[in-house]
Image 1: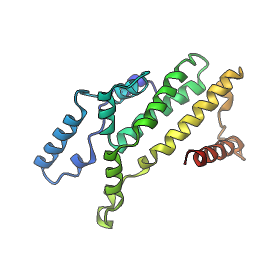
Image 2: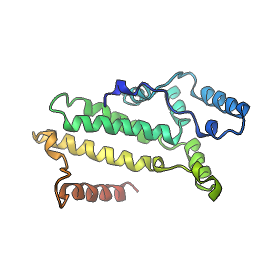
Image 3: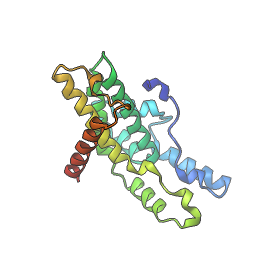
Length: 194
């Protein structure tokens, strides 16, 4: 996946989709667009580019604080896709530093009262509104950690002079030893992070 393939707009908040009327949806859309100002028409691609910049501005930080859990998960997924490309590429390893910057900013920007409220509201719904709950995307911080781990492993292999594609896990391996080692390493890092 190339970053330019992510030219789609960011996803509007769940409140827009769950609105009971067109007016309620319009009010939610308008409030969301206002919250993103002065950063307008942010796409997934432009969000990833902004988060990978050396420094973030207060306007960008404010806009990112209003992004939904799904948008933040989408951004960290794009960073993972970029990491995978670096990991399996024979060329252009300089992109790793940009991804590292993006991951550092993502981690700083993840805590948000807006997302905390979104997660709290969607986790307490009754059985009849179970479809409104936040799914896998609520694990975005763990996905961030996995991306960080893979990038660190790739960069350490680069510094040792090994080819990055030697880290690949072969699905044909019966014991999946490399995948097991990666999961074990991930669990150790997760314990350190908490």
